[in-house]
Structure formats: structure tokens, C-alpha cells
Length: 453
Image 1: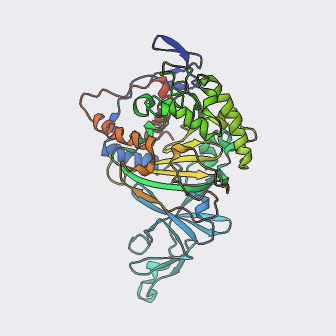
Image 2: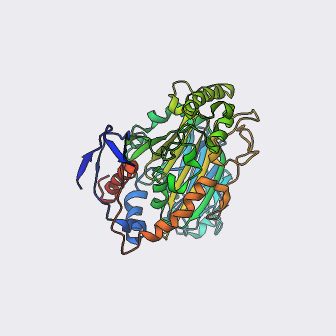
Image 3: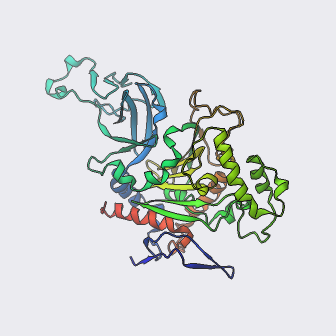
């Protein structure tokens, strides 16, 4: 594939007016992506399983879900079910959720607490650390059949920023190497101090990559999110890449889209945002340019009031939405007080379906006026103290309102993309500089599928 180096100072022509997109100087291809079969082909799905999912680090869950020895949760990745358990105060382990007798799954709940796993079929039992505890009627088995005292099959498990990652490949690089420059870029958010305050899961009728793609670019916002573009700049994003397919874009807030002709006045959405920051919208009528500096100052005072550390953060990190991608299937919309985590997982058998998980993790706060950014759609009355029980996982249907307006707007349109990519008239994916993160991600994806990683 031909490559080009994107120039951060390259002007982009739009509506007869030139602007500069802040694109990282990274070499990426510039051609049409013709392998649209990856969005619906079972052959591609099988290749992904062997070459990508079975070899890459993925997020299974949060450390805060394993507070006590004996706590465990399950993680479903494609055709595999995985148990993540705290087997000792300082030890987290990951096991394939399968009995070593005749292959039954051991557990089928999302979360649990026990010091052992008992097969529901014939009651073989394993300790929380995966060692064999008991074989029912062991005296009836030939010695050579059970002499190895089979423990649970274990996989690699490492942590970063409060997230638990697993990897089925014993020869994969360590997590720290896989994450490349991402930990340094996100260190100031201190996600390790955050707790889960929202947990939703939905089956979406489209390939996992079609779902993910929509959350890695802002190019579609003007068409799909009319409310959003009246309170963000959907064109002048900043982009960064961190290696190994990981990237980010900064979404400028406390402003409005340059596509809106009237520049000085406020939109209703901006008025609501100003009010949410403790400021009086009437003071900024016909003064839109003054909103962002005032909001940054207000945000800094707000975080100080609620005891949220922002030491070292830039104005952009305090005010804006930092949209990070962890290759291959995670996006993080980061703010000082909390992060919207979205996880896109392949369906076990159908390449035209996926599991879409939405979490919100938050810095704990006890003040009743403390709240998450409104677009995260954290239900009113949610316990943000970090002291109450973890919220239950909500399984919702495609289109249900629990995900929030913005996410449902994407969910409504993506089935049309899934249908369209299969058309005989579709001649390949054409990506703009506003979609540079997709090109960067897919080049890493191709390296895995070609066996180069």
C-alpha cells in the first residue's frame, strides 16, 4: 500500500475557507480500503479470532470489581468465557471457564464470590487459585486419567490504571510494551482511583468494527448529532497516535461547530453547559468567544471544590473531551472527574452482530452536587461516593434509552452502514484526514491478520 506522511500544517479546503487540521506526522496509507468483507465475512471473522483476538491484550474488567479474595467476574470474548478472580490479596488470575472433566462451563453469572468453583454437572471442584480441590468419586477413574490432577487452564492477566487485561497468547509482549505511549498520555486522569457507576450492555446488529469506527471520528457529528454540534467544535479536533494502533482525538467543548454560520450568539445547548459549570448564561450572550476561557477557570475551581486532582493538566484536558482508543476495541472519553468506557466485542458466531458495553467510571465524591458530564447519561440518584454496592449490569435492547441520546443516535444509523457495505455497488472505504485514526487502527489490524504481529 502506498504511504504518505500527513502534514500537521496542511490546509484542508472546506466551504471555500481554509483551516488546519492538527494531524500527527504519522505515515499511513492514502488509498481506498477494498476489503469491505471484513465487516460481514465469516472467513474474516475466523481469521480475526485466530490472528487478533487470540493474540492481543483486551480489557476484561475493573480491579474495583475484585475487592476481596474470592471475588470473581466473567468476561465473554467471542467464543470464549473467561473467569477473572482475586485469588490472593496481591494476585489476580484469569482462567478459561471450563471444567477439565467433560467441558461444562463452571459458572454463568456476571459476578460472584466463592473460594472454589464447582462444576454444576458432576461437581468436580477447583480452588479459587485454579488448583484442583476434588474429583467426585475419584476412586472410579483410571489412575492415568487423573494423575496430573488437572488445574483450570490459565491465561495471562495484567493490570493498568485499574483495568484488568487478559491475553490468550503466552508469547505476546507484556502489557506495558503493548500499551506503548498510552499510559504516559493518560497518567494525569488517575483512572486507577475511579469506580464503576454505570454498566450497560447491548447486542447491536452490526459488526464490531462498524460500531467502533463511529466512535473514532467526529466527521459524522454534523449529520447524526445536531444537539452535540451546538456545544462542541466538530471540525477542529487535535489527533495523536501512541504506537501499536492506539490513538486519541481532543474534542473541543464550550464552543460550537464552525458549520453554524452565526458565531457570536449562544445555542440552547451552550447555555445549558454554561449553567452546569455554575456560570450565568446571560453574561455571555453575543460573547461566545469568551465562554471557553471562563469555563476553563470555572472547571478548575469546580474540581478543587470536589477534591479532584488536576495538577499538571492542560486547559484542554480540564475542559475538553479526550477521546482515546485502546487497540483493538476500546474507546475512552476522558474527563478529570470520570471516563466513559466503551467496549466493542465480536459475536461468537455472527459477524454482523456485536456486544456493545458502556461503562462510566468516576472519581468518588460525596457532595450531592457532584455529577458526571451529562452526555454520559448517568441516571439521577446514582451513588457516586464509591462506598455503596456496585451498580448491576443492565442488559438492554438495541435502541433503548438507557445508553443516552448521543449513543442511541449512532446506534440508529449504524445498521444502515452494515447493510450498505454488503452492496455490490460499494467500491471500498474512502477515509478523510478527519478519519485518520481509523486508517491508523486498520493498518495495525492488517498487521495482525497478516501474521506480522
